[in-house]
Amino acid sequence: MSGVLRVAVITAVFASAVLAAGGHKNVQSAMEKHGVIPDVIDTAPADEAEVTYGHLSVSLGNELTPTQVKDIPTVRWNADDESYYLLVMTDPDAPSRANPVRREFRHWLVGNIPGDKVDEGETLTEYVGSGPPKGTGLHRYVFLVYKQPGEINYEERHISNRSADTRPKFSIKAFARKYNLGSPVAGNFFQAQYDDYVPTVHAQLSGH
Ligand SMILES: *[C@@H]1O[C@H](CO)[C@@H](O)[C@H](O)[C@H]1NC(C)=O
Image 1 (tube, rainbow, N blue to C red):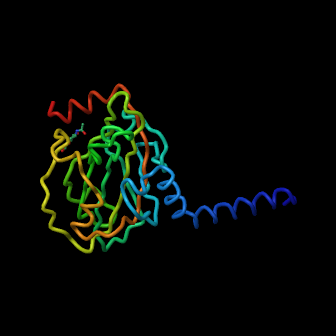
Image 2: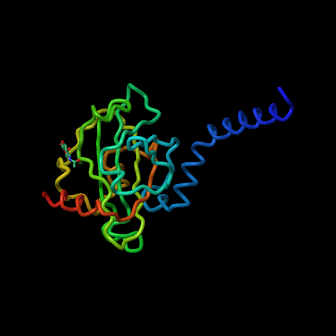
Image 3: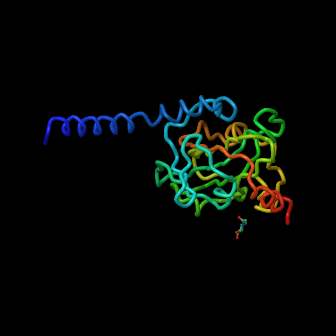
C-alpha cells in the first residue's frame, strides 16, 4: 500500500468510527438547529430512527415532497425484541411554522409495537402523508419512538386515514406524559412544502 493510500484508508476508518459514535450528537444538534427541541420535545432521543419511503430516506431535516411521502414509510430503530414501543409522526407547523395555532397535527400513531415490527402494533391513528397548505412554507414532520413500560391499554379513539378528527392540536409531549412513556428513544424528521398532491391529501382527510 502506498503512503497516500494508507493515510486515506486510516482517515476513512477513523471518520466512520467518529460518525457511529456521534449518532446521538447528530440527532440532538439537528433537532436543536431545526427547533424540534423545544417545539415538540425537550430531550433528544439517543438514536436516529431509520425512516424510508421506498428508496428515499428521511435524514434529519432533509426536504421531501408530499408526493414522495404519500404512502406509509418503513421505520426501523434499535429495538429490544422483548419490549413494546409507540411510534408517532407529528407536524408542529400547523397550519404554518410562522403561526402554529393548530400545533401539532398528528399524522400517524401506533402503539404496542413488539420490537420494531410496526405492522404488528396497534394503529391508533392511521397514516396520512404531508399536506402542508399552499403558501405556508416548509413544515417539519417528526418521527418519534417511545419505549413503553409494558403493554398499554390505550384509551384512544381509532382515527382512520379518511378522518381529521382529533388530529389537530395534538401534543406528543402530553400524550407521552399521560401514558408514562418518558422521553423518546429514537427519532428523525424531514421537511415538506406544498405540491400538487396536497389537494388529494386534504380531500382524503375530509372523507372523500
Ligand atoms: C387507508 O387505509 C386503508 C387500510 O385501513 C388502506 O387500505 C388504504 O390504502 C389507505 N389509503 C391511503 C390513501 O393511504
